[in-house]
Length: 225
Length: 202
Image (cartoon, rainbow over all chains, first blue to last red; front, side, top):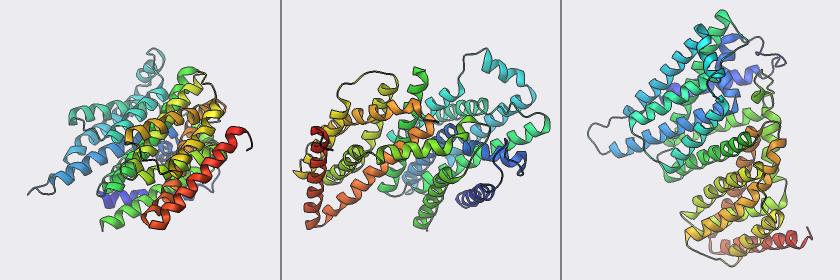
């Protein structure tokens, strides 16, 4: 998983660098197509970056701890814990984007009739997930899966691509799923890799405390407005 | 192999953070459109004020001086409590003597380092946390004016954290016998700067 994630990490970095010289004056980014626009979308929305990084750090931390605990066993079950929650994350994003693309009235209903502020929900998730990582609290796989599902729905509802339609919208949303998923895998790989030494574990905990602190202040700002 | 992987991934992560700063983004999303200005404004906020700088460095120095686990607990406590202070600031909850509290933080934390005060970890955390509220309130008051509050707040939390890290790096000199004198002298300088702000000389 790590090798693949590193390759995709380089690919995303290269894409970001290569497009940085292109025209950014219009939306979406011209010349790179809807798929790459979709892939880059979560990387350029700060609230998405924070919440996905926080979740990835948390899952990676838990995997690293479990791997460490199982190191002495005869048959260590590496990567058992994150597979199901991560698949739930991916599956829920696909389902949410399917509704957005083909049944927009459902997600519009959620956005208009139900009191729902997507950016505030994402900030709450960023705070909670950051604090989970900071505390190294272990969640039951079912609870972690539920967290992944809720987070994927919140991310999906905050990425409705209203200004696109037809196949362009579908392609952009597919790209969005890919981008979000790659970022999650990358954060997981980073966090798991940095779970060997004490200072590495502390680094991840400090990073997530920064995520929680930043998100908390902005949530307070939004609530006060 | 594992060490190499960790370094590579950390470098990639740092590259991504760097990209956030340099890529001239102007996409449809309002968050993204102001990514650059908001982040650097926030990042420079704690760094550009000497009163903030000395207090943050003092937290790192004191943490390094106290050793484990204070070396990492204090720099975690500070931004979290600072966020609470920032929330009070954006909510408009008045806290009296903000500037005095910030100046006092430099003075007292500097003195703690200079005199090698070694209280229990929870006492140190409470002291640092109390001062963090003043610093957070000052930053929080700027938040509504930011072009993008989220990246602004992330910027100044990272800026604050790096100042702690600078303090910890200097504090690591205590590994050598002569280093303790250097660190304590640094605490004395910080205390003097704090005093300067307190009496209005700086």
